[in-house]
Length: 273
Image (cartoon, rainbow, N blue to C red):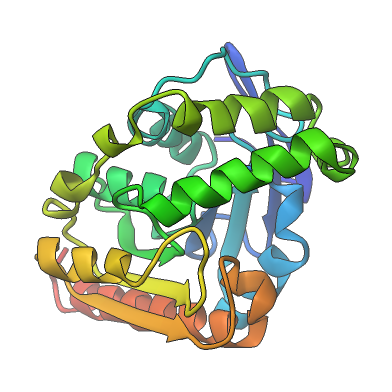
């Protein structure tokens, strides 16, 4: 188990992953694991980890996936199954390395999809629930349109300089990610089957005007999941609930996590799992 500092690197040979941590360590309290968006990293969460830790009374761990932030570079071009690889091969190693004992996965956009794949692919009784902010279960036309738009902005505006603040190799991060969707048959990416195997409650938080995905994503979860699915459609925001409506988002996650973790403790006290 790694001794967690506020910031540092997880050594998972051959990978080196940048991370941030706030609140009590995994041996002392439940942990909420943050999984960032397609062009995010641990630092791009801003003060959300610290605020979430305070609101939920849990430790909060955020890491930069391979090819993001200051983590090891990715092998390019990425394949269409890169989120499945993250969920099934890398995330289990991360959770074990930090001494994860109980808690929730909290993902945004790609991170939400990774959390859903993990929940439907890996039997992990330590995970009590999933919080999915702006998730993708299928790729919609609006998703691709927004990806093309951000790629054009990256290639033609000062967006490149802005992303260079957060990523060691912004070109590889942005072009490597956008190329996956622009150069492949994005209709082939579909994780609806994984949803049917999720066995823990899900909270979906989505902006009413999300330009990367419509409310169809919520409908899919309700159609395919056998587990409880709560959904919060936040009015007047787009794709980033934790930045555009932080108070609403923090309250929803803290209440959801608190309920699940209290329920788990009650079951344990009663002799359940």
